[in-house]
Image (tube, rainbow, N blue to C red; front, side, top):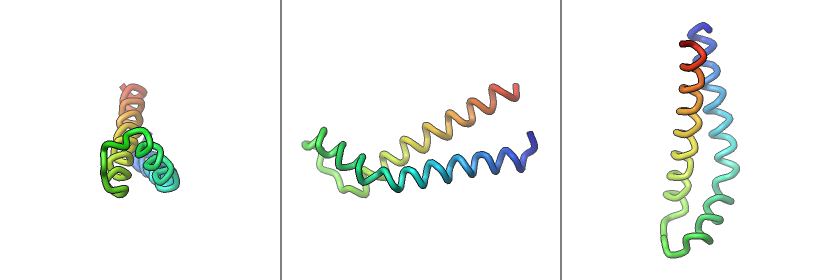
Length: 71
């Protein structure tokens, strides 16, 4: 796989996850707020934490999958 194709694939994955996250964060934050009412956090902070966790999980999975296929 060429470097340009690999970069494009990682860009597409990041774009898809970011777009889906943007649409899903308000619902997920309200859901987490109802489950954990004692934790009082700003909605933006909770959303950024949630987006960071999802983004890191997806990128780690993508890199590990790519590395195992090319080795």
